Length: 188
Image (cartoon, rainbow, N blue to C red):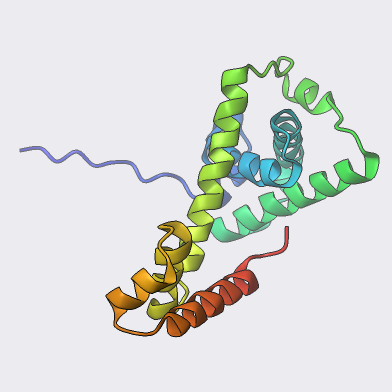
């Protein structure tokens, strides 16, 4: 039987160094969703998030030849550095420049209700995924208490009976777990 070898995806830094549209297109497809979610979280406006995402990739395309990293992590950090700068500039100017779409030759953005709902869903999924990752960083007894009380909506007495401890202990575990989570959440 003949083995089919799958071609390994090219690393981000190689895509940026290639200097051609197809390679940058692959880089764009790989990271567009993450940048869009990043912008959506900070703007809470799907249309604005989409415009800012276009500006990020326009700026990245214009400066790809100056990228000096040697690994995927530095390429992602570089891209999100651009995203932060674009967002900061947008805040300062209090408006989004639509010339990014013109520079990329993209048509005007026409978001349908379905697209807006999809973008909002992506943001919700990302927030939920972030919360689950943070929950995994809690000690087991705190995580279990937080999940049982906050996510499952169970009362303290029920959880205490299940765990064989007092309600005061369950309250303390939930309180400490939530306190730890607040400390783990990065500032917006």
